[in-house]
Length: 372
Image: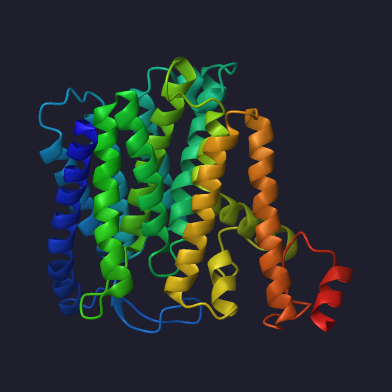
């Protein structure tokens, strides 16, 4: 209990540092015209500074540094090196823009540095039977998916930061209980920084700010670090608080960003016949906005659903295998997504020939619901 209170204080430190940093960053961004401007693809209607990721980075790094005094944290140098690469790539993208290939290279290089620190690479993400090369390739794939999923859902106010607060808090409590204080430190620093950003992003007017690619890539990288350690530890240990179906549980923790990426990429490739990386307004949060939700309502709805998936995963992991739990999560995600599409169709917010209609709905059902 004392340890948990200590980590909450670390979160408060990270929160305070981020909250102090944001108004100063907003002033600089406005003075230098470093702002996000409305266009046809974006849902924002105002000119807003996009350098919130810098404040998150400051809060996280100082929270870890100030709160970690006395912890023998040998992995930290690898984690900071990885975060610095992502940080500079994100800042450059927010300031002048970088190509998708350059961004992907930065992500892959940062993951490569993180892989160097994992002693039990063969057990990473529950894949114990693979050799070094297949396991390493799998780790790269999972890292790219997690990092990009946070980047891609950052489309409405508060969404990416609220998911980050939720996942990092859950993992932080688990790390504290299991006896990994250094990773609890990272988790609560991230949670505190993202909570401060959430408040400014959602509720502020004068100092409203977006996290930009700097923030979303940074958060995605840190969640990958925490997820990797969560999997690695559960794969090689037994005892109290050990999670059985650990990869599936993590999918449950990040159900919304992971399923949304899978859904959007499937629609772009198989329905629209275009590049999976070409942006559009077909994310689930865009669908909620089309239904009449405002940004905060859509964020809260997604946050509640993701909370249900997280809690359900923790409960069901005691009774289901990794495959069974993964199928339950996927099936439930498809159900909720399909239900949302049916409601939108029923209320005539989209047309039956909409090329971005839900991939899993038969045309006969689409027409039936639309005409009801």
